[in-house]
Each structure stands twice: as structure tokens, then as C-alpha cells.
Length: 500
Image (tube, rainbow, N blue to C red; front, side, top):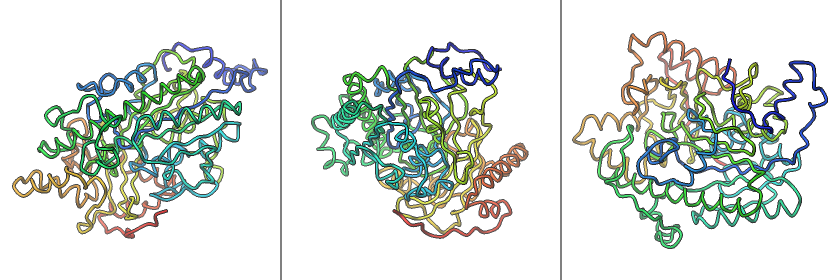
């Protein structure tokens, strides 16, 4: 039995229908609650994995104190620290968040729309009287029929005040209509081009005015994450990334201040996450640990004491969780099946006997990337072990994604000329590995392939079977390729997929 938690009045009201079913009493309480509907501020950041790496203080750990606003939000929120995206790339990740479906069930395999008619968090809330506003990254949530914003603010700028102004405008419009709101506010930092990089000069006004951060992190101050090398140019780029993250936090603070100024904060759910990991090798657009593990925070009016949850959760859970919290029905998946996501609310409430995210393993995916090239990858993982399968890896195709641009991967390639360990690392990323097994605790950089280690034979066999079962359940188009890799046979991967 789960331990009992302090339950707020709002959580008790939400739990009464379940109690009524269990006891046969209180049947008159099974109707919708009479309290005013809650608003939803759904916040995302772009390309920020769970550890940033190790820059955040308080929420996840770190030493530079760059994210005071995020830390303050985390302190009053439930924290989900083993959360993953099911697709570590922009559009399919955001579409998974908003549909509760894995990419090959929604149709959003890459930079392409979900299937027409797919229900989303937006359409479900609109059908129950919500005003819906989307701020930035709207091109990554398609088609418009599944994301029919009442107010849209397209853009890619990084001026903190711009986001705050848009949030204020959207709230004021919803209030004028007398409607509850969902505002999906998508911060573009810390996406490339990074702070102070040559490529960012024009878009960020040479980091002057509000584009400037108060403490510019230097290369000497950064920590090197375990999946990268300690090289001068990598330190330089990590410092740029840290400063982009710092500006993200300033933007977050202004957005939350705008919510407070609107008078709506006391009746607003705040949800925060990232789409996937940082845009470096072995992170974004990969199924490696730092590509798929993302932060998730949930704060809502009347919630009990904030709690840190260690259950394995995924971004397909966001839509069912938020709909459950807002007392709006969760839609079905294709052909009347269940969606892939699971509401976290029974877990949060400490309820038993409900479908909850007590998953033993999670499966993550990559299909096509922004260029349209197919780099299919699958991983099945728990908190320690990861089985990675890459049908695209044929020893000939080289990976071409935005993580190989900038300073880091060229620095690795240059160092590879005189360093055999770095040369092997470059090959691992550049050409992929058809199948690998990693102990992430012992080897957090996922450098040592244990696929043939006898001590892991049984665990590998179990994880292989679980991956096949999940791919079969979801009608995964890479099933035949993964089975071929298990048999030591060649795969068949088309070179490209259409881009919307």
C-alpha cells in the first residue's frame, strides 16, 4: 500500500467519485465539482535536459545558482525526477505531450503533423469552455485542426519581456470572455544559437539590454557532463549554454510575475517541463540518457505538501494528468484504444487500485529529424540500465543533426586525431551502434557497451522481450528492423521521411 499523504480539500473533492464507487455511497457527489474551473499555465523550455548539466541549484543540483526562479517554482511543486520524453526531438516530443500518444500512434514521427482529428489537450479543454493561447513553437504542434488556438503568438525570439507581455495579453482576453484558460508558453532558450555565440549575435541583439544576463558564466566555471570530453572548445560552448539557461530563468520569472499581476495565480495550475535534452552529441535527437531525461514540475491550488516522486513517468502522461486534475475527460487513442499516457493524479493523491505510472521500464524513440532523414532509434530503460537499438546504424550513414553543429563535435573530431578514446567516442556517435546495453550508474556517459557481458545476459534478454512487446502493442513501424538486429541481420531504413 502507498503511504498516506496530506490531502487538500480540492484533492478530497476530486477523490470522492472514486470513494463512492468503492463504497456504494456518496453517489450524489459523483457529479462535476461546483468550484470554479482551474486555469492552466503550461510552460516548456527548449533543449534543456534534467541536469542542464548540474547547473541548477536546489531543484536538481548544481553550484552556480543560475536558476532562482525555476528553483522557487520547484520548491512549491511536485517534482518528477525520473521523467522522460518518449521522443527526444522537438516536434514529436511536443506532439506527444499534447496527445498522450507515442509518435507512431499519433502520426507525429518527425517534423510532421499528427493524424487529422487527433484529440489534444487543447481541443479537449476548448470543448469544455476553455480559452486556448499558444506562445512560440507553434509550428511544432500541427495540424492546426488539432491545435486551434483562440489566440496565437508565433515567434522564435528570446526577449524575456516578450513572453510576459504575451501571457498578460492572453490572460486578459480570457478574463474579458469570462472563460478559464490554457496558455501553452514555450520558451525558446536554451536552444541554439547559444548566448554570445557568433550565430546568436543578430537574433539576441549582441546580448545587450534585456538579452544580457547578470553573471556571464565562464568556461572555467562549468562542469563537464559525463557524456562529453573536457576540451577547451567544449567548455566554451557549455558556458554559452549555461548563459542561455540563465536567460531562460529570467524569462520564466517574468512570466510567473505576469501571472501574479493578472490576479489569476490563485486559481491556476502551473506545469513545467522541457521537450528533451541539451543540443549536444549524445543528448538531443538520441535515446541516450541525457537526451530523454527531462524535468517535470506540477503546482496547483490547494495541493498538499510538495513531494518528490521517483516513479518512472513520461511526457505522454502530461495530457491525461492535466485533464484529470482539471476534471475534463481523457480522450481515447486510435480506434477507441487507451492513450499511452497515464494520469499521475492517483499517485499524487495516494490512491490505490488505480492505473498509475508504476512502470518497470520506459521506451523512448527517435524517427526522422528536422532534415527529414531517418535515424530510427529505440531504447528500453529503467533507472539504471538501458538497451539501445539503432536500425539506422549500418556502418556507412553518418549522423547529421544540429547537435553536430557549433563547437563541441568539431572539437571532438579534431582531438580524435591524437586520442584513440575520443576517436572511438566520435565513431560511436557518428556511425551509431546497432545494439548496445549500458549500466548508466557505473557508466553515466554510456561509453561501455555491455551487450555481450555474461553477467547481464538474463537482464538483456528480458529487456529485449519487453521492447518487442511494447513495439507490438503500439504497432511500431521499426518492429521488423529491431527483430532483424536481434537476429544479426541487416535492416531496411528509407533515407528520408516527408517534412511538413
